Structure formats: structure tokens, C-alpha cells
Image (cartoon, rainbow, N blue to C red; front, side, top):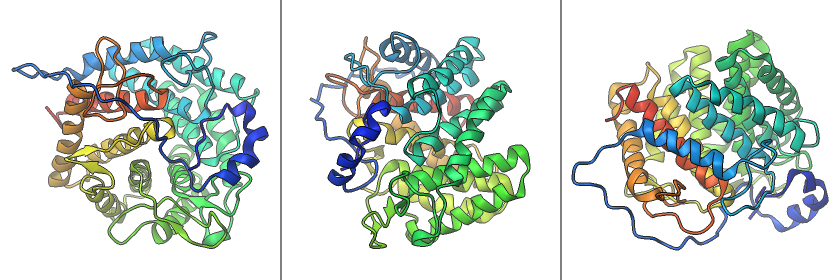
Length: 390
């Protein structure tokens, strides 16, 4: 099972060995978590998501920030490895915090992280993996729209150019997963590229970016999405044109996000219908949820998967063109997840999140796992402020 939990500075040394030993793209780690009894909610339940978001943001910074303040470390017990792709999701939760509070502390931390990533990544922003670059590019565009600081836009442009270079006709289209496997196309790299290209079009108005996004989307929908809306992981990893039908929460979220962004760019309602089909599956598929709660996908890379599912389902809920009944259904799903995490999956006083939102955390908690918890509570605060949930 392929994991990208490597210090980016060591990637080129271990890349060949990692490729030989792996069988799929990002997949959950299997580190066991010892169950701890959940916190019992009080008789009169109050869910103050904004207050808990403040506490989680502070705990995450204090627990995971590196000594030099350049990046966020791998886990809560002091493993200081720099892992590239979670840093983009840290940037996203800092942006969430700023949008919720307008507190300038968040923008200071955002800019410090943007600079720190480059320092830790060998004084450049590009890396080996095209999906990694897509995560950071999309978080950077969001940072630009929040701050109007062109440093964020410049990072996004640098990474977008790299990602465009990963487009080829092998397996019919799509974006390659990494530089050494230009024949292997997957949802993480392609979904990110669709969102990025559509945002570039919305921001800069270049028609070629919209065409690029639409072509990638058509390829992904026809190649990696089932008629029922299930989003698969990738194709042609073994150069046999076979589709890997592994199903992860983050792939569903990325396709929903791509559909929403293309709707924003085109106002074509067909994209909303695609998002609805995948969202309906996401909230009911036993491969993705259990009793209405997004399933645990372990720690390591898998710890971050639910964050992506939550973020893009939230974007769909907020889309004004979405039918009211669908909005209510998806909001209720996220509310149940948030409420469960609020009292059952967050340790106190540690304020660390469990990979299983129905159980208390135990032992070391990876940054990736923590980020999913913070994303869920920040999303709940945002949905509550918008009167989508209670």
C-alpha cells in the first residue's frame, strides 16, 4: 500500500523502493488505535462549534508546529518529519479560522507556513507528486482570495504549470500521479487539477483554463466514476489499463469539489447533478460510512481523507442552486458527524482528534488525523453560522 509519509528531502533516495513495494495510491495506514470510552454528552447538549474550533486551532498549533515555526510536524509525540501534502491542509484550516474570526493571527500563520514550506522543500515549491502540488496550489489560490497577497497567487501559478505538464493521452487522458509514473492517472491528481484550472479561469479569465478543466472532468467522469456516482482511485498503475476500484472518502470529496467548481465557472446544472449523485452515495455507502458517520481510514495519509470529504460536501451544501431537500439531507449528515466527533472523538484536555470519530483518541495522533477533526468542527461552525445546521 503506497504511503507518502516520507520526508520530502529523502524522496529521491527511497522513491524506487517505494514504487516496487507499493500497490496503490494514497491509502490508509493501519496503525491501531486502542479504544477509549467516549465522553458522555451532558443531559442538555450544547454544540458551540466556534468555541471548540478556537480551542482546536490553538491545540493544533501548539502541538504540531515545528521548533523553527516553518511547518507542522508529523505527530503529537514529537516525530518532526516534514511531510509536504498535509501542510496544504494546515493552510486550509488556518484559512477557515481567519474566515470565521477575521483574526489577523491566522493570516500571519498562513504566510509563515507558505514561506516555511518552500524552505523545508529545498527552496522550491514543486515536488514529486502532482496531487500534492494540486493541494497546495488550491489552498494558495484560496489564500490569495482571502488576503489579496500575490505571493499566494504566484505559488499557485508555479504549481499549476507543473501540473499542466502532467497531462498526456496515456489511458485516454487525466493527470499523472507522480513524475516517475506518467502513465498512472488517478482521482487525487486529476480532481485537484480540475478544481485548480476552473479557479484559474474564474480568477484570470483565460478560456484555455476552462477548456482544460472541462476536458479533465469529462475524462474522469467517464473513466473513474461509476454510473452510481462511486469515484474510483485510479487507472493504469500496472500499465494494463485496469481501473483500481478502491473507494476512499477523499476521492468522493474531490469529485464533488470538481463538479461544484465547474458549476461555479459555467453555471451548467449538469455538474450539480453529478455532485448530487456522488454525494448521495457518499452518505450511504458502507464502504465510506457506518451508521451515518464517515468511517475511520486509519492514520498516516488515511487520517486526512475525511477532511477532504467534509470540505467539499460543505461547499456543495452552500451552493445556492442546490435543491433544498438535498441541502437538508447533506447538512444533517455533516451535523451528525460533527456532533459525534464533538463529544466522542475529541480528547479532553488534549484536544486531539481520533481517526474514529466515535471513539476517544489514544496514543500518538498524526497531524493528518488532527486536521480531519479540525476541518469537521470548522465546517460545522461555518454551517451553523449559515443556519444550515443547529
